[in-house]
Length: 137
Image (cartoon, rainbow, N blue to C red):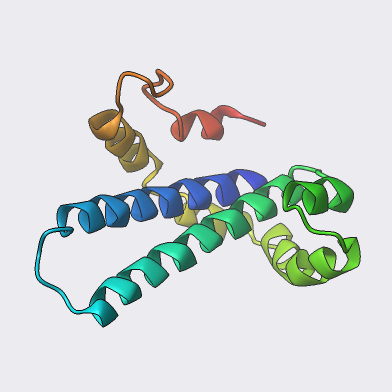
């Protein structure tokens, strides 16, 4: 297990949670709710989407992507600001002990099962998109 793989599994878990909340939001479209409730729900979706981006950035940096690449992909201009924003998290994840990474990665099979249940015809065919990470070195 590497910090990069753990970050990718964590990003997959966050994307699953975002997808579930988005589906629930669609289901509640016709339900009575106050403007504040609907706005709060939308803000939660936005925060969760930002968390997914942060986790993907973390995984890419741990995989060796340069700060220049990451800055461009984020459509940001100042590489130093991007580095400052993520450097501490990257260092923390890079220093995780193996046993903590293994424990944090538990449940990868459940993510595969979730994907299989929700997969549509136009989605990539894979029976183990998350656990396939565990076979990488």
